[in-house]
Length: 397
Image 1 (cartoon, rainbow, N blue to C red):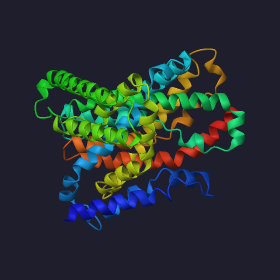
Image 2: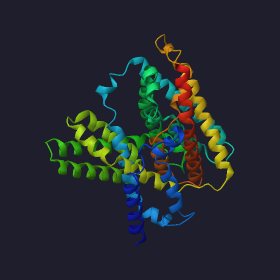
Image 3: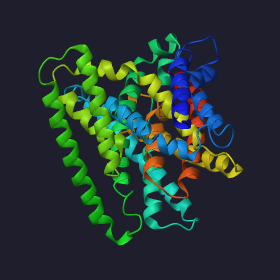
Image 4: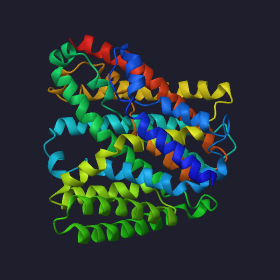
């Protein structure tokens, strides 16, 4: 009975709260940025969790795991729909290379920073690798929220730089998911370190075959023109089916649905209709995800805030140095300010999905602490991003 009551409460909060969140009020830029990202629902989840009201205790959260998998699947499918090969070809080559270089440099710097820090703990090399890959993937993500909130005078005077930042933030998410897919393949064989290569290959092959089969089934359902209600039913059903399949195979619902969404976006002519269905409940899904993340969030040690500051600083260095490098790779890129990386600090919603997927699939004592550190770091970045972005625009002028 408690499961149904908890489900009713969080769904009601998400669907009613999203009408208040994501609205523009007259607030300072950093406060408006914090409010528009819905981070307050992270604290709401903390309040509903076992540390305070205990409405969403461990047993209840286990009972709500199908909903958690569905949320991850919906976000993954929506993100996959944003990568159409035809549109990616329109991106200038130097912009695409810049995005890849910046993302890879940030990934490498954060990976080794986390990996050597975790050497202080008594954990296996496989666990260290999985955690380092996950946090590096989350660090590589960049959002466009801060760019959209900039005043119109900055937009008019720094149009080329903002266009480059938008391209980079679009590609960063793809790189992050590719790296996280490697980490997800290690989540099964944590007790058999010597077999990691075989398990990695097996995990990739099994899930690619299963996802390809779902794509084929999906295409059979939508090959003829569907009425709107029928199409909505098909989209929801396939998201549930794909997420359930991934859970049974102990794989990531986020990645499985991303692969399905990517294939449908590049194979189906009426993909815009499906995209509109997916985007219609994006905000409530995102807020529910924040609530579930907040439930497992623990702030019981000052070391969480210190380590989060170190993680955030490491990511900031990666973005900054990566920005310096890409502004020197060609004559065309030299037109952009050398502090370009300061405009790539905002992380957005994708790292939250990656962290929640990691928390659900990686059952280890250290998981809760790692996710808690990463969540605090995301809040740090949300607060820093508007300040650094305005600094970048002023330097660019």
